[in-house]
Each structure stands twice: as structure tokens, then as C-alpha cells.
Image 1: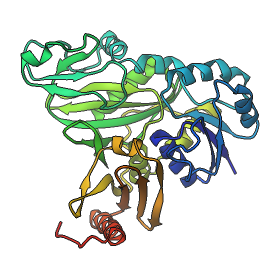
Image 2 (image 1 turned 90 degrees about the vertical axis):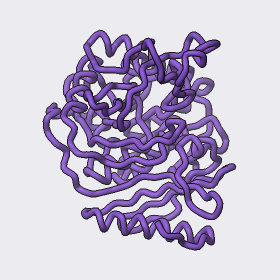
Image 3 (image 1 turned 60 degrees about the horizontal axis):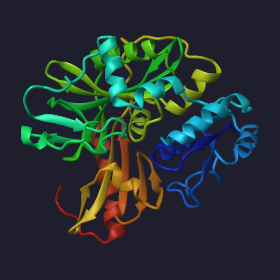
Length: 368
């Protein structure tokens, strides 16, 4: 049985563990926290700081097939970069591409250099979309509707035009020369631009062509996700992240059968066999990934950042066409992943999941 090691015990680590288990792999978690969020879902947990005790990671590398960094601590990433050549197994991470993607200003310069469509910087009139240069996902973002609100804004913040449209995402895995494009997804966001739901979408040729162009120009050797606004004028890329994402890979797996952990291992061990951005990924299942919390006697959508602040995230229930995860913390959150080959069957599984959670919480069912 194959075994992988992940560095980091939060949501990215949960995603990799979930997909690794679907592929029949075992997972070893390394985290310096004594009680990381996902300690109860992995097969083995080693508590130590790789920066202070690198020899322990070298020992682990002798007994696993690969190591996947699933954190965004820059000091840890730099340490792994220095350690990688002394490990006994591959480290599945593209440090060069991550350096470009980790800074949104640096990313925007890269987009401009290869003519990638992206929201315009410093537009002449509101509304403006404001975001910090280095935070992941939606952290610190806001929409400003009046020029007076720009006064006193931290000069490091990026100010872009606000573009209407769905937020769409696509993962790419590369071996440096060839690239595998996954399944397109829609990221459903709340008023703070935090993701509370993911669903698959149909073949989107423009998004696929843009994603392949980005990967080729980066010479990507690892995994990257591309997030864009699907505007009336076509996709406009918001950001790229050259690390394993959370949430979307689960929907990619259930909707298409593509397991991005397996593809990532393939990229480093045997290579990606071919590149074809025009090839549509088959729609195997209808599916939904959503986060829900109890509020005034009913389950309501909540964003993923609520989970990242929890103390324990684990599998609560699993059955045909349905997986439910539970997060314990200041806010109790349930994540429902439901799927089925037909839309009606997928929705029936979703309703079954809602019923299981409601019964557990003692909630009287209300009409949907």
C-alpha cells in the first residue's frame, strides 16, 4: 500500500487525506501543533517542527512514497526547499511557481507579461475590489463603493476593478513539460468572498486555454489552481495558487473521477503523458460540496474560514453517494459532499445528508 506524508494539519491537509484514502493510500501527518485540526483523520501523526528537527523528516522520507507540503508558512516552505535534495522520496511541490503565486502583485505582473486577462488595476471609478498582496483566498478582501473609502487604505493593498460574474476554478498538474487539466468548478462565495459551496460546471474552453497558458509559462512541476471571474467578456483571472487547494479537488473527484493526489504523484514519478486543453472532462456525477452551521434552529451556509478556526475536523458519516464531515470549535460546522449519476439522485442524497445532520442536532425539518 502506498503511503504519503503531508506537512500541515489544516484544510489543505484534510483535502489531500480525503483523496489519498479514496485512492487506498495511507497518510502520515507532520505538524508542530500538538492537536492539529485534522489529527483524527490521518493514519499516523508525528508532532515536531521540521525547521528545528529536520532529521525526523528525513527518517520519515525513507518510509513513504512522497511528501506533500500543505501549509503556507513561508519559513516552513523555505526549510523544505533546503531539505528536499536530502530526502529519500520526492517532495511534490513547485517552489518557483509558488514564489510567483504567493504574491498577488507579482502574479499580476506575470499575467500582464503573457497577456492573461485579469481585472484592471487602479480603475478610475468605483466599485473597487480591494485585497491584500499575500493572503490566501478571500482573507482581507472587500468591495469599496465610494472614493472616500480609499482614504487611509494600506498602500500595500491591491485595488482592482470590480468584475461581475461567477467565481470559477480549475486545477492543473504539470511535470514541467506536459500538463493535466482537471474539471472546472464554480466557487460559491458569501458577502465576504468566503467559499461556502462548490459545484461542477460544464466544459469551459476559454478557462482551460488560459489555465494551460499559465502552466506552460510557469513550466509548472506540481499542482496549481486558477481562480477567475467568468465575466460577460470572458474569464478574468483573479489569482493563481501553486499549492494543493482545499474543497474544489473533492468535487473534481466526485464529478469526474480525477483524483488530483494520484495525478500529482504521477507527475513526479512517471510524468504526465499528454496535454490537451480542448479535451472535455466527462461528467460522471452531479455533486455538491457545502458547509453548513446551526443558526436559529436551521442549517445555514458558512464559509471555510470558520472551519480553519476549529479544533477538530473529521469524518462524521459516509454512505453511498454521501460523505459528511464535522468540525468542532466555537462554531459547529458540517460539510456535506453529495453525488449521484443523475441530478435527482444527487439531490436525494443531499437531502438524506441534511436529514442525518438535522436528526443528530435535534432539528425539526423545515421545507426547503
